[in-house]
Image (cartoon, rainbow, N blue to C red; front, top):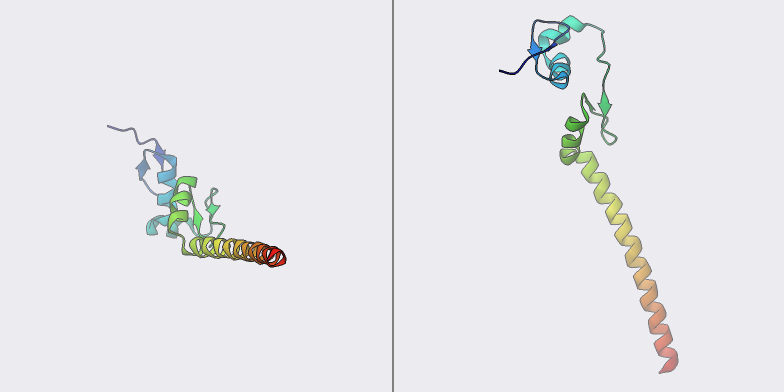
Length: 103
């Protein structure tokens, strides 16, 4: 049996990992009402949507699903490809101009 050495600060619940304890304290309705204005010390925010998480693992999982992140990534790639298309078009036009001079 796994040792549950992490105890909730607001109720009798115990957990095998501190991150599970922190998640419980942040999401359990009973603990939220007990906390009143007490803040959890560890909060990690998504840089795209500002949603907060209690562990970097949870944040990494969120990044895979974050629609704001996906939209930003899409727009960034779109701008990058549009710039590259402009560069290639300019190169092609220059090459055509050079060919016209020799024909």
